[in-house]
Length: 213
Image (cartoon, rainbow, N blue to C red; front, side, top):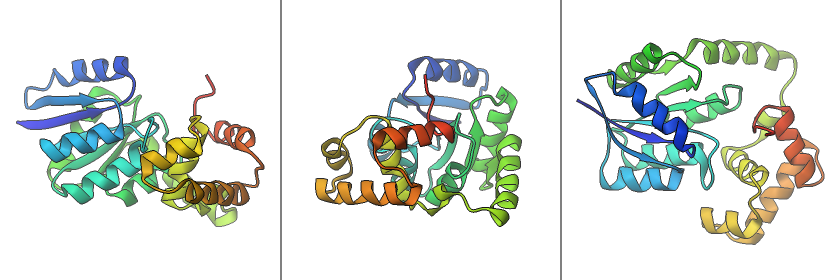
């Protein structure tokens, strides 16, 4: 039996995913949590075999949660299941230790295939994401995206900023000083050539990093 943890801040999506997984007799959903911190806590107390991880969530987010889970329990296989299929997220998730990457629009059989693949020690990337990664590498040869200049920590803080979190909230979540967060914020502004949080949010929307709705 494959023991599986669902991590997504949308209750409706978790419920739908759980219903889909109920169709696989060899998979048991042992838990569902709404954010990265709760996912790390769950893995620390009751390590599952596979974690289906969203990226864009409140708090530390999916990338940092994946990094912590892989460090905490290397035997746990993380698969990102997200609407954010564009670079740089796939590469950053894989760099953080994720074993797979699926789009939320993937069919059920592909989800089952991904779970079984990572249990066999393989990586699994859905076809649409793989195609975008390949195209991204081709485009990068001609023009380097400013997003690619952000470090994983800068990307994490950028996503927290555009989700409306202030310096103190980010500081408390990441256990960094407000001054350090402020330094990161201005470094992100410089790299992306924006002047404030409003421009940063518009940049994130323009690059499909967040849903404008």
